[in-house]
Length: 308
Ligand code: PSU
Ligand code: MN
Image (cartoon, rainbow, N blue to C red; front, side):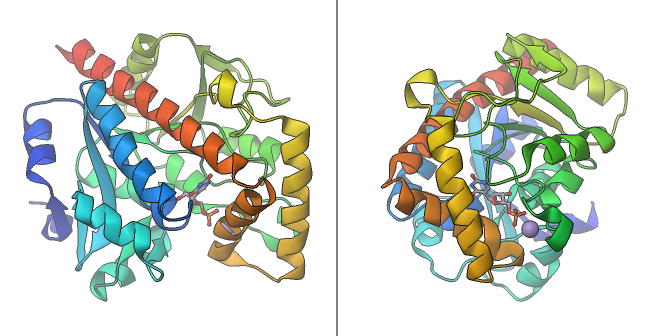
């Protein structure tokens, strides 16, 4: 028994699926507690799980509750997280203390990857990852998500990264750390709210079966670290990038005036953007998460089929 197993609380359905080599997809909880307002966040959390089921995979939303890493939440747990005003945003740094102190914790991309790997879950669906922040030269603000992608063996399906980040530097960081960023049906990095950006991708595929083969091969090569699958927001939900960049630039400026720092920066910007777009960004955010759930579920299924 691994020493961390005493802290894992895996839902029976998820345990059963893992034991029988059925496809399982992990989901994060910071997107619920800090990424979207109530009640949209809980509607999203439930619908994402449902979409993953429709692809023939089992969803496992992850959070920290009662001193345990809970893998697979009940609807009641999702409701608790969605309503909570004081859930702690838990990245790698915060894991031990939030577990030890039995606080309610919502996991980011970084900590969800760690927890998924502990539970032997290979796929993880989210909206967008953290990255190198704008003005990084002054603040050194680089999300722990990037470092995690370089060392933890979980494939992360996202819609690229938000323009609240410095996208070229985020890509450089990932390249330095040896993280494969694979475009799914795109040859440029999707920019979260918009399908495209100026950044060309070096790796891209059109079929989930090819993604599954790449992930399988990386594993057999014993290459440590994650893979980032970049899946663009559907055309019909995509927002104009000039419109968004303008709003984002203003939000970033305001965050400096308001002296927001550390882990509060990302939630602050997300909230400001929803306000400034009068909810349009929230609709786009929901659409891209659902689209990622679809692709993530299909990918997990394709991977299991490959193993048969
Ligand atoms: N980007 C989003 N929505 C989110 C996040 C990022 O569009 O909810 C969350 C994720 O949990 C991500 C975290 O892992 O923010 C990154 O925070 P930080 O930049 O403090 O590492
Ligand atoms: Mn940060």
